[in-house]
Length: 62
Length: 542
Image 1 (cartoon, rainbow over the protein chains, first blue to last red):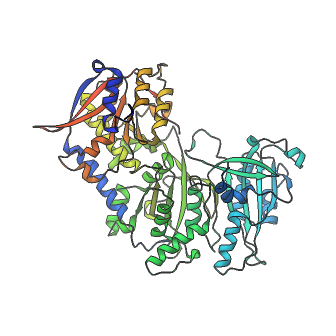
Image 2 (image 1 turned 30 degrees about the horizontal axis):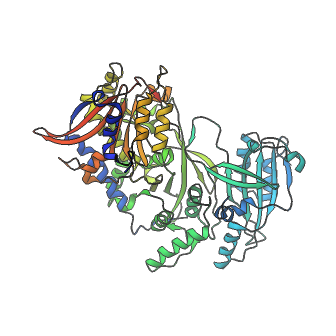
């Protein structure tokens, strides 16, 4: 496996750390606030529901 | 040039038996010419008007025979039972004068403003109906007139080959092509192999859909949502479409849906970094089921737009997007064609009222799996979560945090291949002239980034319109399909985490590493790495 192929997109940061060296990076912890996540979930749910509802439409474009 | 290109572009590349050189400068009258030669066709007149606006000097008129797609079109009309006797002309507009073949040979490709192939089907010799079979004209030459993905078309004029960039305009003839077919051809011809699409192929797909539900298909009756979807699918185009009346079960819900998922969001995302958009709307006075549809492929950018500030300041606009400022706040108009009226119109973003819009389609760039609207929503949440841990420099961090708190952070989602991002990073210059370090650029070059990414650019209200600049970007994997279950309560799915590639802000990059649990809930563990860019940089122009 080549050096490039070894790193998948889930480990982009690992590659960056490898290039820069361990001392150049530092950890950052971020707590996920579920209340905030709810707005993304709500938007995506509405979008998915709206986009699924096209079967059987009577409209014709002419 | 491949055999496929020749077969699809053969009608444009054919040599003509003769050429007429028309001086279209003063005192030439577009009105007289179009009235006399093309039966007052409004769309043909519109093309002449655009050529006049661009100060064109000469129009070369060449008769064409039915070859390639013109031949295919004629054969299809005859298959449908129409007794047509077609006449075609290729008209090309030039910015320099030429009154003979010899003078024409001195013109360069840069002198070409555009061309159109006009056609009369000859169904009724007493009432000739001229229409634009296709036209490609140069975009209005203004930096704030944005068309992100013009097509490239080969054509011949007087035996010489030229290449023309633009978005093809096509017009219906009410026989074998209506607004849906011509809108699809306009957008698809830029991206399919061979650079064009035969109406016979679009109609064959539509007929297959009709047959699958026990119906017959007559192209003159127009196309349904299902047929449009199938054409896009057959051509390998990913898209997101909303059929508003079907999605909402009652008039009250319909109004709410149109506010929560506004059609302009899809049009902007498609025009800004996708393959364009389709807008379907009611025609006042038309029959109950019939709608008109037009292709949208660009937008204007108005630095002095009042909308971005006023919507919060005066109108308490509390929708999904009120927590941040989408970059379309500075869009005054979308750019699109209307096959009934002509090419390259500006459609003011508020002119088509939501109650008149029934259908919208956002066409994605190749390999993109989700909408730019979702990318923006994810990016905003990532920024909000990261807000308290930002380690950006002391100048920009407080400004960004203020903007996040006030709902004033500007987000602009752009889908792009990973190679384009590396080039963008390489060319990046901060306001003080600093470049990103070679080590960092090389680091990204060595990574296996997703083939296509959503880059959601982060900016501030005074910075974005005035400097066309940003303070960073959130880079997401556009090739992973995210669903609402990925954002479910108390859950941060692996896919969601994987979709976040990294965040670049002044002085630092942030990379998601893992997810862990704590008594307070889930924690995303990032690690940060230094960036040499400590100030704002220009936004990307695709």
